[in-house]
Length: 465
Image 1 (cartoon, one colour):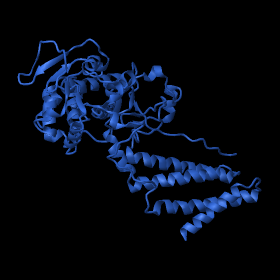
Image 2 (tube, one colour):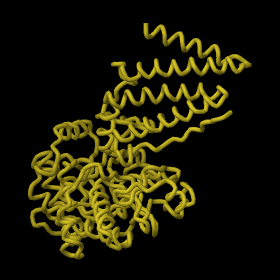
Image 3 (cartoon, helix red, strand yellow):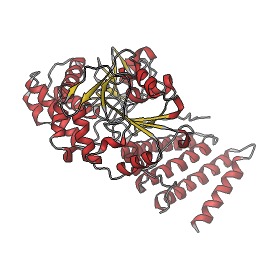
Image 4 (cartoon, helix red, strand yellow):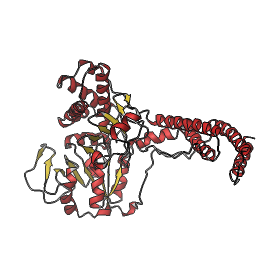
C-alpha cells in the first residue's frame, strides 16, 4: 500500500511540474500535495529496514587511479602506522608526557596534570590559525569550512570567522603549499591527534580561568612538549618496554609479506625510527627472523629530507654491536641494515624504475607526495580512519539519515518552482531541517569536524521566485 501511494505521488508530482502555466489554485494544490508527499517519504525513510546504499567493506583497498599490481616489481613500506599500527593507548601516552613537560619544564599551572586524553577531540588534516588559536577544517580549494572552527572548546561563530579572514577563501600565501606558513600550521600525521587535544584543553583552561595568554605561545609550547617526547627518544623507550600495550597485533601482516616474497617481489623498508625500536616492533609482529622478508632495510632515514637530499651517504650499522660502520657503502645488500642516505643513491644502486615501485606510507607530505611527483613511483596511503568512518557510514543511523537527506533534497528541488509566500515559508523550514540532518550525519563521524575525508558542499537554493 505504501509503495503504491508513493508511486502515485511521484507520478502526480511529475505531471503537475511539467505543466507550462500554473494558476494560484494550481500552485496551492501543488504545495499541499508536496507537503503530503513529504510526510509519506519521511516516514518511509526512517522506518525502512533496507540500507540506503550497499555497505562498503571497511577492510577494502580504494584507488583513485588505475594500478596493475602485476607490473609492480618492488614494494616499499614505512614502519610507524603502516606496517606497525598502534593502539589508542599511544595517544594517551603522548598526551600524558606532553602535559607533564608543560607543567614540570615550562611551568604551566599544576591543574593541567589532572587533564586526561579524550578520543575524538582532534583529527589529522586540521589547520591552526596560530595567532588566533583557531583550529579549523580547510578544504582542498583553501576554503574554511564554517562550523568547524574552534578555539579550545568554543565554537567560533561564523560571523567572527568571516570578519577575521574576509570570507572563507584563504590564499595560498596564507595556507602554504605544504600546509605551513608563519601563521598557519597543518596537523598531518596521527601522532598529532594527541597534540591537538592537549592544545584545545590548555587553551580552554586559560579561557575558563581568565588567564591572559597569547595563542601562538601556547601552540609553540605544546608543540615543543610533544616534540621533546619524540626527539628525546622517551616515546620509543617507553613503547619498547611494553610492546604488547602499544602495538596492535596484525595476523594478516606476515602472510601478506610472504605472498610478496613468494611472488619474487622486492620488498624494502624506509623508516625514521631507530633500528633497535624497529627490531622490537617487527619481532613482535613478524617474529625474530623478520629481516628475511626485506631486501632493503633503512632506518633513521630522516624523511622527508631523505627524498630530496642527494649527498648524504648511507652508513651500515652492526646490529650486534649497535654501532655504525666507518667504511663507505658502495652497494645495498640483503640482510644488512643501513641508516641515513638518500633516495637518489638508493635508486642508482638498486636500478629501480619509476612505475615498477609501489611505496606505502601514512604521511601524505613526508612519505608520498614527492615520490609520485618527482620519481614516478606509485604510492598508497594507510589511513586507519577509513575503517572507522566506513563502519559508521554502514550503520543504520547513518544510512537512514543519508536516505532522508537525499529525499529531502529532491523535495526542495521540486518546491523551488512553486510560487508564493507560503511555499517560501515551507522552503525555509525544509532547508533548516536539511542543515540539521547534515549536522546529524557529521556528528556521527565527529561532532567537531565531521569526516576527515569530506568537506561541506553548498547548494544554491532560490527562495521567493
